[in-house]
Image (cartoon, rainbow, N blue to C red):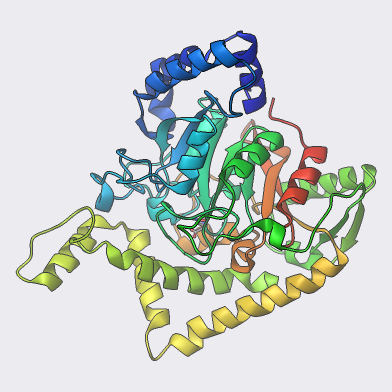
Length: 471
Ligand code: GLN
């Protein structure tokens, strides 16, 4: 598999050019993607940029920005000026972005070329990409299975070899879980490390953008390019403001054993235990820890997240953005536009969120969930005095079959290990730990390393030592 690093080496040596790579992508993607449906749109005009990049390599060789000519796919809830930004919703089917997201600007300044928009669960709500208004994406490893979600199109785009990098967003696991299902590296930064300006908000206190890649080094490079304080997003911070966390030769890694005792697939658990042995063999210390509050993350997430969703999605009212239906009065315009524009999962969450924020229930639900969140942060702060990382499987199972999790609760349970990370704002990385056999196919499963606030660089350090790149 091409990584950013290998592709750039080939560009510098002249073994290939950005023009060749992007032309090949454009020639083949429509056919190759017929079955997978990773892309909602392919950008033909990327070829013009590729030609410029090719010229620059001829003139300047290695003396060029690090991502020059690297094709990148963007989840379609990230704004790219003059391109459609649909969030895979009927509501925004014909909506065109009027400005660039900050991360888009930064990647472009580093030379990246955006080649297309990837499919996703509608407004990033889901864990399988089956909630897209434009049809599901399939997992390139086994097309009878989902690629995970909500950044399933981004994961599939990398897994099928179309691009070396795709950008996703992660509100409760939407980068990490699809990376796990598709055998990729996925990174969710410390909250605030990456600007949310130009990202369609799902849960504003939870959302972060991050890379899906074939190697840890690529994830690190792409993340570092996107990260940093942005005057357009007041929640951005420099991770340098956290206490310094220098890399170590030997790390201490905590295993929340009790947390793993229920609902984790046996094969996933044995792959996980094998990974622990590899950590020990590499000289790291592994200790058991308890995280009783962290274990309640799922319950708190499914209160906090819908509350934020209901508020963030109020802007799609048939007046300001996207789809608009006629009505006899303003209320009917709202009702008809929202009824037609939103899919079932989005409606479910808006209803749930409105309920938990309503005056009679605010204290009982939203207030409690926010309190639980605060306690979880305290629990984590204590644990991180004793260990450098917390280790879990990324998801409790490998990729499941399309249609298998029709019950929303069954789908929500896939997020058990990922959502506490967003609730507490800490960073986490996933990479493949092994494969498990299902119906004659080897399905990848990922391991998740969770670090303390600001521990982003350290996560890349340990991940690089335990995983190199997808072959
Ligand atoms: N699967 C989770 C959910 O449905 C996470 C979504 C996300 O991170 N965007 O909410």
